[in-house]
Image (cartoon, rainbow, N blue to C red):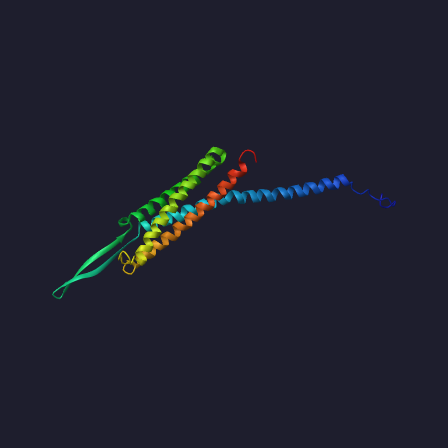
Length: 209
């Protein structure tokens, strides 16, 4: 009826329009931070799971690494005398340390993933985990570096000490050892990333910020 009489509907007031705009922007703005917070919260979980898998793979590959090589050491008459040589990780203390360090790192990361909910509830628990992360990374880095030094010696030998390389005879052993080293170095990099994220999180939550 009002339209027939030529009257017009009053335009919505400015406060009402502003309130509607604010409500819409607030709803859209809340969804984005929530999604971002979830992605940020998932980063340590993904990194820790990847570190656990990398270190577990490194420990398993090196622990199962073994190869035998048969060589002729003498000839008696027309009969060759052969001897079998076996390369195993247990023969080198550096490789034993490597396996132990990676096994500890894998078990530690798995335990932290299992008790993650309890850690998130207590700030002191987070600080303890951060310190243990640094210790685990140091243990893993030293084990990997030690094994890498022995692997380089086995591959190239040492001319000055007259130590001959062995990878020309134990090629499969050296190849599997290289795979284990690459996986362990990946674990070291992931643990470093975890430490950096943990340090940044603790710095943001520290008093006085």
